[in-house]
Amino acid sequence: MLRILPTSMLLIFALISNASGDERPNIIYILADDLGYGDLSCQGQEKFTTPNIDALAATGMRFTQHYSGSTVCAPSRCALLTGKHTGHCVVRGNAEVKPEGQQPMPADTLTLGHLLQTAGYKTGIFGKWGLGAPGSASEPLLMGFDRFYGYNCQRLAHHYYPYFLWNDRQREILWGNFGLEEQAYAPDLIQEQTLKFLEDNQKQPFFCYYAMIQPHAEMFAPEEYMVKYRGKFLPESAYKGTDGGPNYRKGGYGSQPESHAAFAAMVSVMDDDIGELIAKLEELGIADNTLVIFSSDNGPHQEGGHDPDYFNSNGLGRGHKRDLYEGGIHVPMIANWAGKIEAASETAHLSAFWDVLPTIADLVGVAPPHDCDGVSFLPTLLGKEGQTASEYLYWEFHERKGREAIRWGDWKGVRYNVDQDPNSRLELYNLRNDPSENSNIATGYPEVVEKLDRFIQEAHSESPVERFQWQGERRGMQGAEAKRK
Image 1 (cartoon, rainbow, N blue to C red):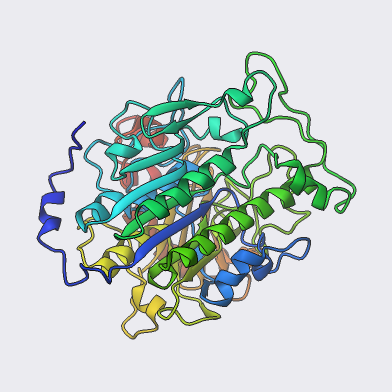
Image 2 (cartoon, rainbow, N blue to C red; image 1 turned 45 degrees about the vertical axis):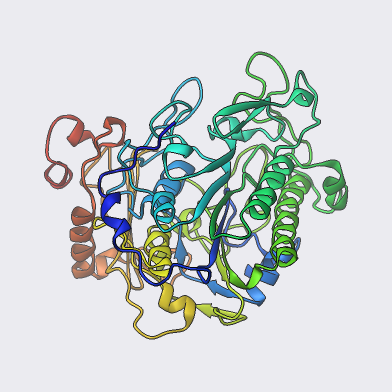
């Protein structure tokens, strides 16, 4: 089947610079699912350790002011792959497509995968897609990826012992998981295919997007990991879920009487898999020519029995997944590239998911799309002068009555109930003085509130998808006018 690329892609072929050749680095982007800022021991986690991810930080760079694309899965991943924040990208929330899949991106979407294909990279995604149903114009193999193994649908990715996984465009039936059986642990299968992709492409530049499903609920881990933590986090958090019947493994989480132990076990599985991946790079002799980036798609969840407050999963942040306070969108990011990125370094450069595409474009020598919202942070990675930044960072969330947030320097503005009340007051916080967003100081700084409000109006554009429009837009009014009348 021929891949049809957006027309704008044709322009990019002519813009490939002297980054081509054998010196082009491999790129691995590892995305955890619902991992909080404080869920790594190198980020302050005290109840368990993450030695392999810590090693990446010890030999690489930690970004202390990095933000996800959104506060839930699908829009965050859309922002990552398109370089657009949620005021501009099409997918701005989780939206089901029955029987399997989520809201697709338009067929002419230019993704990070497309961009790297034009630069001569072999591209693969392993894990969770969540951006278009099977057979749609927005399945992975039509969105810039040569190889796909894992879950198309994020709802089905709730389950660690699924009935099937996608192997490119074919369903791979997992016969050992039929009925109530639990023989094939999906993260193990995804890890195998990820390592195989590295082996198969070791002699050419590759981009591996490793979209891990841990530690999203349901809270399941193999027994050899559970036994390490059983009884260590008492009293336990018990969860009663769906353990049979017609909806089993179709969305609802399975029961877990030991959710605390299971959470630590799930993160340990993820950490061990990352350690194995780094060891594979070293075994293949390509570790020094591989940029590895690790992050999380949003803040910690409160599902399936997980208690993020018990683990201090959000660090100093207020809120959790689905919030636009810091706990919902402030995420860990670690970048590692031996000999290129200074070991044990740290940066407070303000960045977000939509900066990843222009950064990688800068690295491989191609031009990012003209409508990209991001700014390359490659100078920061390489310790060079000339780093610039976006004037502000913006998020909008089309669930729970509508939410908006804006960050400008140390200032953070948050507005809730936007869809119900377009005149809802903007809360204002100074994150330098108040990183936990405890004190709303909007009344004391009216000029800052006014400026942030102008940024919000500027950043939001009406989505072509009705479910991602504010009420005023759905009534046919102009978005900015409807929000401020």
